[in-house]
Length: 236
Image 1 (spheres, helix red, strand yellow):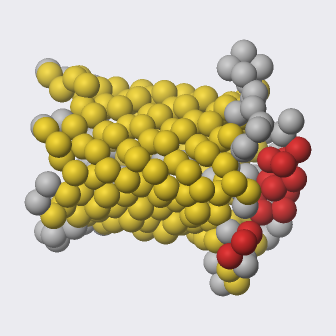
Image 2 (spheres, rainbow, N blue to C red; image 1 turned 180 degrees about the vertical axis):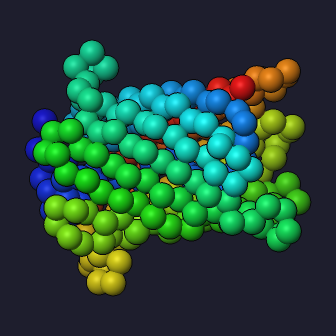
């Protein structure tokens, strides 16, 4: 059932950094605020059952420049059968704070795979700007695999339009192109894109609740597939 996925993991991504890009990383400041989040994403090949990745995270805005997050990720063909796969320590450091017409941050994520005890490090810039009611995001991440000793390049982008206050809709996309200095042939690269919705569900008093979701079409792990992503976050 999952042979296509397991084969592609070994060929394209390596054991520690197996998961593709699936959430848009944004530069933001949550100084002094505690956050909790539920993430859920799936991949589905044609005529195959979906593979599920539920995740839980806690974040803290250390100061106006640094936000740190601990994220646990499970994997399985059902929620009940999902097993804890990775621990992730994620950090965003703001490089600009309003002095530019854009926001720029540095993203760093340390990934620990529990099954084969390998590590990966994801590092790269995160960019965002507003053009009237249009918000644009773009990032490039280099992921180093400690087991295979190679570095792969992952790209992500999003453009969303503010429909009404607190609600934005648009498109987002992700790509994995292979080694950063020797891209894979086009047929082995993974590119996917689709509609995205961002909503602020609650923003009163000390609490803010946001929901980001998208449905993507294209290639996952070098093979045709679809992906659903959802991120529900609470900040206080």
